[in-house]
Length: 428
Image 1 (cartoon, one colour):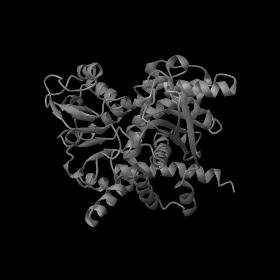
Image 2 (image 1 turned 90 degrees about the vertical axis):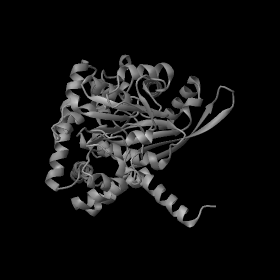
Image 3 (image 1 turned 120 degrees about the horizontal axis):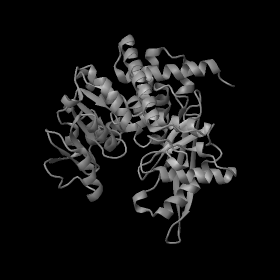
Image 4 (image 1 turned 30 degrees about the vertical axis):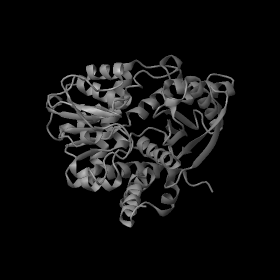
């Protein structure tokens, strides 16, 4: 049995790492600094709608297994809801609720006309066959069919989902609509109405905001040491794009651990090794590090691009970077914010740093609705315009209100959503 002291510690850790509590702590701070109208506060602090569904799936064994799924639509003030769908054994309603709210603020920070949503299914996709995943996805999509759509809520890929998942959802929705509706989801294969540049968009967005941030320290890419936690669509692509741009990437990791070399890593070769062996182990010329050790390496730019709650009150003092570019959603707990600010670390918060994905998802939705598709260089140029403008808006807001960049991002987002909510009025 745990002692009272240990139990208290566990309660504190649980509160710190609860994503919804972290989001609300930051929301409340920003709302107070904005002197947000109490009526607007009451409306904006809660989701518009939450749906919980039970998904019966015939498994390959012939038996029926019932999975639990969620879709949370946080806000519609600025347009249709927008947000990914994740498959994981760890999905909870609190996590989905927090991620939906983060999507509202993220869309507002980059000023695209969406509100926030998020979905999730409690499952272990690595233990399921392709047929089981398809049957689960289609049944989940059919349960959501009344609340999603191009003008209502536009899902996208997230953790353990991909363009194939989106193709299944698009097809299921289209079968019920009796015509092809490719704007119902984003992150689709290009040949089914996806946008060129979408897969790389989140990593490319990180590159664009880091390019702006290092100017504040009078650094250039060749003299900037970068550590990346994660090697998936965000971390892997971000690391590769930064390597191509001349940055010295000195560490990268996957879920099992990472590799480090003070002289820099050949990122394309490391990612090829990972693809071939499913591990960074035995990659030549580097030393192995754990994911926790990787976060504490001395560097100029740290990019946590894996999962939530990686930088907490118990390790924030040991973070040794100049710029923290949050590639993942919620990689830093609210309790760690003050520590990072006191240490003088320039934080590019997740609701800006990883907004490249939703920005190009917006581009995909626009292209689907008009039936005309852009060249990849046009997509990338327009993404750069939005990310750079949003970075400058954020820095100006922080300077004007004399707050840290995290608080400024929330204030800017809440200000924009509050304005639209106030102008539309409350239908009651």
